Length: 193
Ligand code: AMP
Image (cartoon, rainbow, N blue to C red; front, side):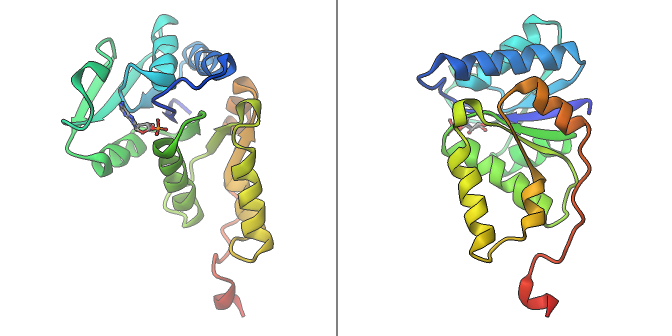
């Protein structure tokens, strides 16, 4: 993996572990020569991970939709910056530029980006690893929701393997490097009868 797209909160959250993990992830990516692709903001965990990559000599590409966010939120120190027309173009370009995805803690924007890449992995649109940094158990309710979707018959258990949950950024990067996508079974139970 040479480029990872990171989805992250545009706020820092109210516990220091969130910022610490974003910073640690950025340091590790720089040390491993993995470029960061992200939303281009200077604020929140998005800004923290970008700052850490840059401070450690790494490369960062930001992709920001024109006019959607206030100008001062744009990170001005990035290696590369792409301005796009809207959120759809942003997600498409971030995806095209990356070999894998990581979600740090965040809110609705982060969840939406995470679920898009996870559901597209399920459809076989891409075969890239989707990592989830489960800092302080932040993503446990989503892990539980996915287990519930399997037990209620809405999701195949093999597709749980499309998302890699880890608390520690170093362990997550190792897991992602070793990832091979699960066997792509037919997603629709009614069609397998
Ligand atoms: P949220 O998790 O709701 O804070 O949203 C974070 C995600 O939504 C990021 O990964 C961005 O793609 C997008 N986003 C939300 N707020 C901003 C912002 N101020 N600047 C750039 N992107 C943002």
